[in-house]
Image 1 (cartoon, rainbow, N blue to C red):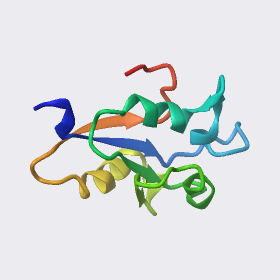
Image 2: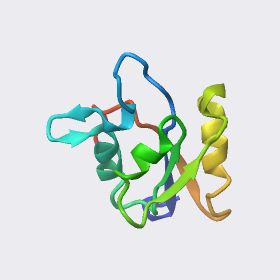
Image 3: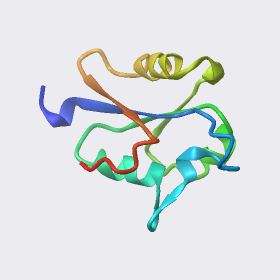
Length: 107
């Protein structure tokens, strides 16, 4: 399938206790992990960001037009968050699994 038909599912639901703040908001240079992930998904379909731990705080950092899904069962792991996101992918589209905690990935 072509790039324009891929829906990125950015998994941003987990908790990292030693950080003291939500992992998607961790700074890498001038950008947060979430901003890097969203930038890397430019040219694809509208991303789905799956939130869980501190969802309300992270949601404030998500730009308009990005689909937000809250996985209330986020403590049970990444698979549940991925499944929560997949439910919102149109049937004709493909999806790309993108954990937010890979800030060194490039497009």
